[in-house]
Image (tube, rainbow, N blue to C red; front, side, top):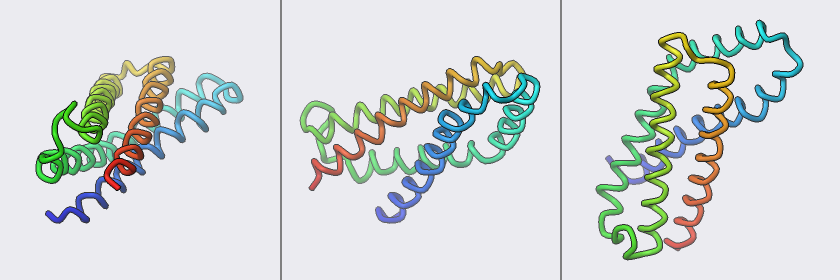
Length: 146
């Protein structure tokens, strides 16, 4: 697969994933206090149902493209402390792995029916901050590679 196609797929999936998480943290949490708990629970259930159909494909594509770029296209950069780029990439990979663990646990809790509103809120908040750090690292990698 060509590098431009890998980057494009990776960025599209990252944008979708980050956009959804940002919506849930910045918009959905903002309306929580304006809705009855039962209504908010129904909204969260609807999001879970839709997310279980879309997000696994987004996450798989995001990670497959990221792993492919890291192993094929970035293998000559020096790991992890041999270069600034390699160090940033390693930290980004660690954060992305943490996001993946969050995602898998959230899917498990959603499927098992024990995803509480509190768990929903804190999982998304944690993933949101992970994603902000990943964005900053990606920007740093871009500047270093220039």
